[in-house]
Length: 263
Image (cartoon, rainbow, N blue to C red; front, side, top):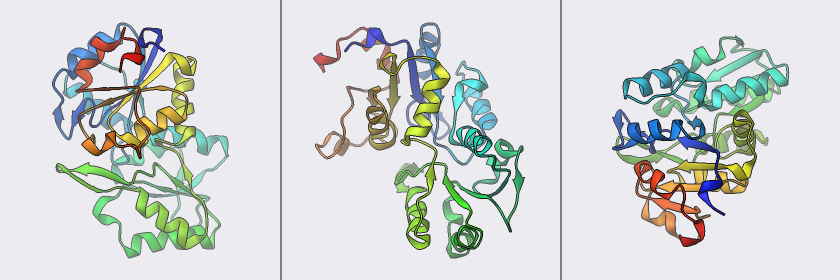
């Protein structure tokens, strides 16, 4: 297996190209270089900003890409809702995400589906109980924009969306529909958007679970960067390991033509 067989890349955003509002050194130059060689989709599990907002942030940072190059859970959920003919939804997510769902009716009484995103400190008994009542009284589908256990906020590892999804599943005795990394539905939609075979695609990410394990479980080559969520314990035997681990995205061009068996 060699990286020089790769024709497409799935590149995580937060933690790989930038952290918070700070660009990671070498990201701009690397993206410019890669764009000339590969088909690329930039993946994000963010549930706090619309795709257009993420796009504007990246452009402001100097990254060269198109808005359609960004693939987020909310965009994937749109496809899922349309395919299942769902029109009425309840959205428990950051208000900034609402533009991604402007083709649906927001209904806080009789929704067909509840969409759950990260609302950070606004997760409380009242907000969670509201969702619990909607999914039990209306038999509404619970759709989570991802199920990450933790994330990095203000330089610290903190609770993410996953624990709250798990709590609702337990209370309502249901299984939610997960559409975000590392779920296979999300990866398959991203893969299909590149119009390439799985063995022609590599995933570049910082999260050992949602990026690396997600990629490996979907038959993709995986590259972990030692930025963002990366922690030394990621290299432990309890985790699925990447094919390659590099210091940062800036190191990616130097390993493009390297045989993976050397790592």
